[in-house]
Image 1 (tube, rainbow, N blue to C red):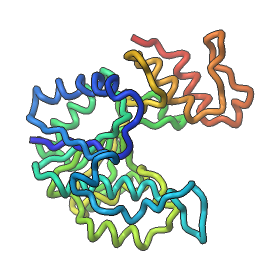
Image 2 (image 1 turned 60 degrees about the vertical axis):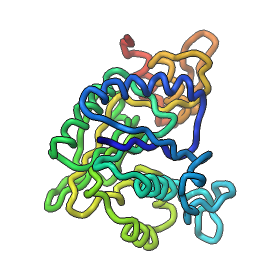
Image 3 (image 1 turned 135 degrees about the vertical axis):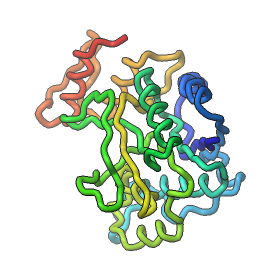
Image 4 (image 1 turned 120 degrees about the horizontal axis):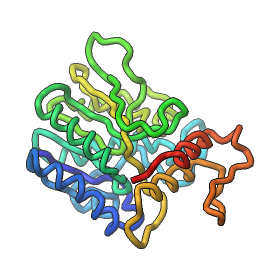
Amino acid sequence: MIDIAYTGDVRFNQEVIRKNHQLFFDELSKITSYQVHQFTNDVAKKLGFGICPYDTGGSDLVVVGQYRRGQGGAVQVWQFMEAFRLTKQPYFIRMRTDLWFTKKSIEVVIDEIKQILNGDYDIGFFGSNWLTDRIGREYHKELVQSVGKTNQAGRTEDFLIMAKRDKVESWKTIEHNFSITKPNKLRNGNKTFRAICHNNSIANKIECQMYLIRKHYKDYPTDKEVCRDYILSYSNGKWGKDGKFTNLNSDKDSMHPAMKWWENKVWE
């Protein structure tokens, strides 16, 4: 059985998001049992979360060499570990509330979950990446952690994380490692979540067509809409009234290639 925990902020239209996530749960129920837990910020303290040592409040500014609210990656790991502490099943999944599954990404995630349940590896980090050489990948798997192996990725993905419970590092060790890490390296989850890997675990990051919701949708959107708004959230371009993407500074916009990929993709 798998414990599934939502952590972090509750974002956007949860009715729409629940409908999307149920597509994943329906497929997961075909291979294993699971229980969903809500450990989001609005209820976490009532359910047993402690006080996060990294969420210092305030705006994202440098104050005496320390980032205020700039240690968001460390906050996410702490939330993961608190939810992990309060659950007990042998496998644990942490999910964001603003995660969006496509049909293809569900197929990828379910297949990788099967591999973890079969003991092929221990921890999976799922998400998508919009750097030029990774745009729109349907499936790419890369080693993050394995004793004695070379060519391991320095960063993870963090939209959805699945771990075998006995292969997760102790909070005491994670906390110590964070204490000797420069604050700006604790800013992003893709830099910090590797810390949950026990030193004898095997972990992979998996890139697939999984997106994040970036706006409030009144009605259920298409994958095409969600992907567009997700890409634009990182871009200085605009979506024009003529239905076309315009960007006067494409040479300076790292998301311009991703938007061109979006325009050229044949959407179902």
